[in-house]
Amino acid sequence: MGHWGYFPHYTPAEPKKVKDGIKLESKKIGKTWWSEKWINVLNSFGWSNRLQRGRSYARQGQIVNFKLEPGMVNAQVQGTASNPYTVKIKLKMFYDKEWNKIITAMSSRSVFMAKLLLGEMPPDIEEAFTDTRINLFPRDKKDIESDCSCPDWANPCKHIAATYYVLADEFDRDPFMIFLLRGRSKEQIIQELRKIRQEKSKYLRKTEVNIKKSQKIKQPSLALEQCLNQFWTSGEKLSSIKFSFNPAPVQMSLIKRLGTPVICREERKFLSWMKSAYRIASRRVSEIFLSDSQGNM
Image 1 (cartoon, rainbow, N blue to C red):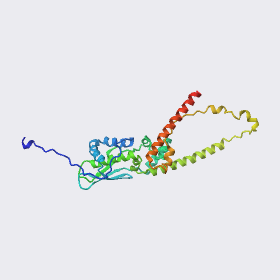
Image 2 (cartoon, one colour):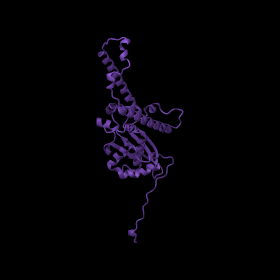
Image 3 (cartoon, rainbow, N blue to C red):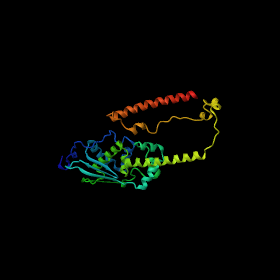
């Protein structure tokens, strides 16, 4: 073969290995809806090929530092160069007026309120944002600003792409980080929801007192001897009351509220035991309820 037909085989340079780098904790990237949504949104911008280049970096643990702050992610990613590259990712933070609308929408649904107050993210939380016409996730690639100190002209480069995957993994670990990326921490949101709940409770108590005052009717009191024939009867109104059995909107709410006991050193084992106990108890209660309901029919 002549020298015109010879092209040496190109082998891409391998990144320098990192000791104790940040690796993806999830075996499957996007195992929860929020992280899956994040990756799907990025792919919808036509970045699927570029993201693939960074996935291996994220799995190998090439991220040296990773810090998520309100509206911003700062990271250092080790590539082929001697020093790690600096990565910055920015998302637009919501204004206070926008957050007020979002918090109001969240508090309007009892299930959302119950789960969020216990530090649990509802799987359909995006509906609260849809009601306010505010997007939790970016709609356009222009909504995300990203920069890397590497010489690669492509954006996202593999270092930015690796940071995107680690961010998705962070959403799997703590979905409230999505809110932080939009400007509000988990603690701030829970505090505002508690304030709304307290205000609603005060209003309901006040309304209940006013109703009782307006509907107060004086009924003649009877001596006990005059009521002996009816004392142990249930009355007609009791038979009209209907009962239903529905699973709790928040599983293990008491355990989540109180936390792991001090005597239990391994939190994961304790939660696993309690999940099993709750599941068995719930199934047994359901069986008893259904058997009683069928027996009374």
